[in-house]
Amino acid sequence: ETPRKKLPRAVAGAGVVAIVLAIAIVAVVSRPKSPVVSRSTLSPPVAVGEVRPYEESWSEEDPPAADLRARLDGEPTDLVRAADERIARVEWVVPDTRAVAHFLVHGRQAGQTTFEVRKRSGSSRVYTVVVEGSSKHERLRRSREEKLALLTSVELKEAIRKRISQGEALETLENAPHRERFPRRALHEYERAEEALERLRKIVSRQGDLEADLGQISDSVKEHADRAREVFRRAREFEKLRYDHFVRREQWDDAGKELSVLLSLLGDHCEGDFQRSLLLLEKWYRPKGHVSGNFEDPGCIEESE
Image (cartoon, rainbow, N blue to C red):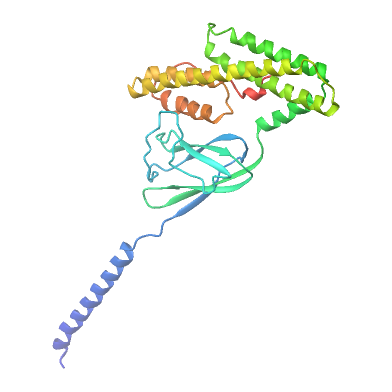
C-alpha cells in the first residue's frame, strides 16, 4: 500500500484517539467532587449547667446553606442541632451577621457531641462540643452551702430576716429610675432566704429540737418568694409583649429600646435567654443604628451577695 493511501487512515485514527481522550478528560473534569468535611472543636469547653457563646468565622465565598435571616422574636433557632442533645443544646443566634457565626451552647451533662453546618458548595463543617466541669452557678451554690453549714440556727434566722428585709426594700422601688432591674433582684434575695431556710430545717431535723417559730418563718419565706416570682413572671411577659409588638410593626428603634429594657429585667448574664437577647442587641440592632449608648450588663446574679 502506498504512503499516500496510508496517510488518511493515520489521520483518521489520530482523530479518533483525540476524541476519546477529550471525552475522558471532560468526564474526569465533570465528575462531581466529593464533599469536603472540615472539623474544629469549640474552645474553651462549656461546663455542665453553663450557657456559653462562641464566635466562629466562615467564608463568604462559600456561605452556609441555610436561611440566614435573624430570628428577632428572641426565641431559639433550629438551624443547627447537637447530635446528642442529652450532652448539649446548640443554637445559632443572629445568623445574618456577615462572615461569622454566633453559637450559644447549653452544657447539660459531661461528654462530647457534635453539630454540623452545611455549605452551599455541598461541603460542611463539623464542630465538636466538649462539656466538662461545673458551672459558675454551681460553684457559687456550693460555696453558699458551705458558708450556711457553719451557721447556728439563730444565725440562720437572722440571715433569713435580713434577706427578706432587703427583698422588701427592692420591691418598694417600683417607681424608681430603671425600675425594671429590681424584680429579679428582689426575687434573688428571697431565693437566698429559701436556701437559708432549707439549712435551718436540716438542723432542726437532725437535732430533733422544736423551733416554735419555724412554721412562721417558713410561711413568710414562701409568701415573699411566691409573690416575687409572680411579679417577675408578669413583668417579663409584659415587656416581651411590648417588644414583639414593635418587631411586628418593624419599628426597630422602639424594638431596640424595649429589648434593652427586657435585658435589664432578665438581670442575669449567665442565663440563656439573656445571652440570646444580648447577642440580638449587640450584633443586630446596634450595627444597624437602632440603639445608642452602652448597655449596662448586670453580670451573673449568682455573684451578688
